[in-house]
Structures are given as structure tokens and as C-alpha cells.
Figure (cartoon, rainbow, N blue to C red):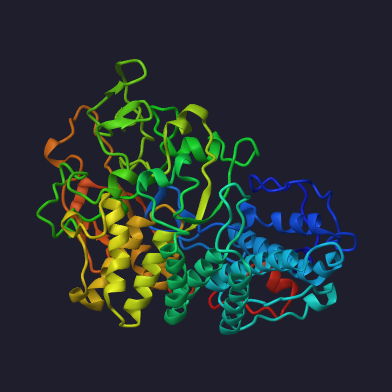
Length: 564
């Protein structure tokens, strides 16, 4: 318990944010720290690390697969002893404890630090604390609300605070931060938290908790900043997620990663899992058929309704974000032509200008992508060349805010031109055209009505924000997890020795039925699909996470969530 609530010592080794002052404070204690501006800044900088930021595990939803490996969410096996749950809780309360310590001791620096500087750092810290509570309340429900340092003896008497009170605290803290942080910094300045980040956290949290008025107002505050030139949608969707897009004005908040700062993902456990086997990887992290089939055709209709869909050429006449996010068959990828067809045992190498063994088809390599699909979003040749990834981790961006605004207004039954403009801005950017070029993309309109626009915005969130760690909470808050996460994960059947691939059934033997919630049904594929993994989800408990067992054992006042 004391590890969580009394973690008042700032960590050394502040390598989490490039361009910040990352001087090692040598493990200062509250007794001899916070004495000047430098020490205040170090305390804030320490919480700009990936440990304390980021969206949910992308494998918790129905868009991503790691071979036939499940996890505690999709396998329905999450318990109060789960390591990911304990880490999530522990990291949040570590950050909260450090913020509480900062606020309690910041005035020690008042004699030598300008008041406005102290206030700005306080606003950053209160934003960080609010963000931690937002993560906690959306996953656990009621949680202990701690706003000041506590002694060990007090810790054993702590109880969970109702989520409504926690939400009120979160929104109040974010209002303070928005009022005391700048809208932006000069291009040459260090990247720090801004009022836009405060509004973005408030908008997402309110959306998740169905506080539609709050979500609408907070999202609109970000949109007003965009109207003033602080933010703008990046013109190239695919480029946004690469190194070239790191300074894009679409990004509201991201955590820097940099090889020089030794903050990056290495070959094992990340890079090789994503890149193709021909390029030296494993192709083990790959998209599901579910997400492949979620992309609409260019007429704005789902594939089971559109006359444009051709199951034998499934990447054609589809939303451009499909080929920006998933590698199209027969196209160059990381130095090779990507072709998972089991009969394509040889493939063209652009490196050697010759045919080579095709390790990305299952007839050559049994562990090639089980769905035949590979991720492209955010990945480029540098991943294969360097075998490391240091793309900045995007946490909030403008496109999500437009969709939050639209969804909140739809749920309030306030469908107007601002709603369709918000959706259409995101769609038009995807197609690389202007907002008013409505004949060049599947634009929506007010006459479609709230019910139909609700379906549109949910589909739009899925494909626009794919592989960004947001799908899981969408399934949770829409109460769709019990549907999406109980269907089996399916993929390509294993090729039979000596039996050629049936050309009439490649790459997909049928067209799945897609229901009103965008969930695909592959049962009609019969033997032309392989069940990779059975998913399970228990709606009587899994819409909330369990409180870590260590907390309930040490402190009986912490009551466990139902059915754990």
C-alpha cells in the first residue's frame, strides 16, 4: 500500500522526454527538494514519461492480434492478481503521489522563483494528476481520491471515492490547468503541456463517462483553438504517424521517443513482431479480418452493402485509410513485394532485383501472418533498416476531438451543421480533398439524422483511430465488448500439401455480414476460415477492472469490484 500512496521520491534517470532538462536529481527527498525553479522543473519533467501516459493496450480490442496468443481481456481471464492491472494502478498512483508532494512543497521555491512560473508548473502537475484519475475512474469506477501527501498510518484507512466525485475533481483540476497554461509555445521552445491538452483530456474523459455536455464543451474549446490556428489536421494521414509527422499541428499531445535519449522500442518484443518475415521480422502482430472489413467502400457503404466491393480485390475502391493502415497485397513493402497467397512461394525482392523465397506466405513459413494481413500505419523502411522504433507516442490529436464533438452532440440530439462538418473534416482529410469537395468523399449531412450519424461516427472512430489504443474503451463504453469480444478470431486456413489455392476463394471466400454495430460475422465462411482463438468476455464483471488484490488484502476498506 505504501508503495502506491507514499511514493514521494522523484525517480532518477529522467530519460522520457527529449529536449527537456533531464538532469539526474540523484533521488531527492521532499525534505531537500523543490527549493528553486530548476528543482520544480525536474519534478514536472519526471512525469513526462511513457510510464505515466498512453492509451490502452491495442490488443485488448478486436482489431489487433498476436498470433494465437490471447490476453487477460480477450480471453476473459483478468483477475485481481493480473500484472497489467497492478502496473496500471501502481503507475497512476505513483504519479498522483508525486503531484501531491509537489503541490505541498512548491512554495519552498517562492523566494527565488517567479510566481507565474510556479503557477504554470502547478497547472502542469494538476493536469497530470487529473489525467491519472481519468485513467483510473474509467477503468476501475470508484477509486481512492488522494489530493495531498499522507502518512502510512492514514493509508490503511483509505476508502474508494464515488466516481461522480472523482469526475468533478478531474474536471475542476483540468479547468485550472486550462486557465493557467498557454495555448502553445514557440516552435523553438521545449514541448510542454498546454491548455489544449487539458481540454482534450476533459473531452475524452467526459465522453467515456457519458457526460455529453461536458464532452461537447471541452471538445469545442479545442476546436476553437484549431480555428485560431493552434491545431490543424495533417494533410497526409499516412505521414502523420511517421517520424516526418512528429511536429504536426494535428498532434495535441505526444510523448517523445528518441534513440539518442535511449527511449525506443527494440527489435525483440516490438519491431520484429510488426515487420514482415521477408524483411527480417516475425509478422506476429497483425490486423484482424474484423478491422480489414470495417473500412467502408468509397461510396460510404459497408462492404456487405456496397456494389463496389470485390472480395477478390478487397483493397480497391475502399476508404484510403485502409491502404494507409494495412499493407495491400502485391505492393512493395520494406524492400519486397508483399503477397501472402500460399501459392506465391517466390516473391520479388527490390533489394536484390530477383525472386526470393516468400517467407510471408504460409506454405513457406507456417508462422507467417495468420490473417494474411500486416500493419502499415506508422511503420516505414527505417523499422527494417534500424530494427528499432522511436516514433513519438501520440496520445491526443485533433481528429479524435472532432469525432468526440460530433458524438457528444449526436447523443444530445443536437444534430446540426457543426456535427456534419466535424465528421466531414476527418473524412475529407482521409481522401486528401477539401471539406467542401463533397462529391469526392462520402460526406454526411444533417438529413441523415441522429441514429444514422451515430452509426457513422462509431465506424469513423474505428478506422480513423485504428491501432492507437482507443478501440478497447469504445467497446466498453458502448457496451459492445460482450458482442465483439465473444466472437472467435478467424484467419486464413492452413494450405494443404500439394493442393493449390482455389483462385475463386482468394483472398476471401465470401463476404461477411456486418451488423449495425459494425461487427462482422464469418460463420458463413465454413472451412474457408480458420479459428485462431476463441474470445471470451464476461459482462457481469469485465466492464470494470478488478482492484489489485494487494490493495484489498492490505486495506479491507478497499472494496473489490463485483464478481472478482
